[in-house]
View 1: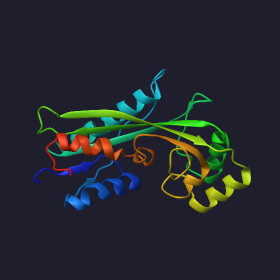
View 2: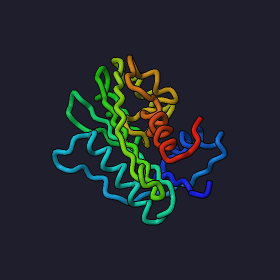
View 3: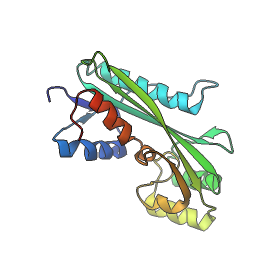
View 4: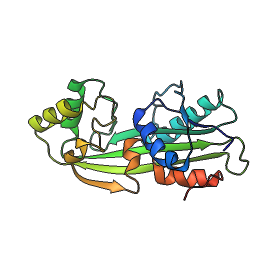
Length: 201
């Protein structure tokens, strides 16, 4: 394949998912961190924010890589009961507080995905938002503190790693692609890449 593939993200989690998809096909990619303002616009809905940011990330990286296929994603976790967007906790104290807030409630994850291919006239820009619902079981303080101490999910939106012990925090998961929870919906990405004429078995 003559075109480079760029993941517009510095996330190790997204990179791992993309590698799982592309490596068996003999395809490589590089990562490029987009520099954009991720501030929420007043009145902006979580799904719209996820779509806008994923598109902005793709367009920002495309300026440095104008002939490459750009893959960008952004995730916005929305706490329905408190009508608030959850951020990465950044430290263990915030992670514990965030999980206490989520205990026994639903959190909606909106994951935006954008694939930008300047060579493909018909499918130059493809974009979508995948929604996934997480129902947390009722958690004790001790359970939360133990989980945070073990996995240290301070760089994860929602303060958990669904691919690890975070799965023990939930009562129910609902959505079309569990990879969206990690940050990159691979089912829809595969579809977008096929429309860019990549062979995806």
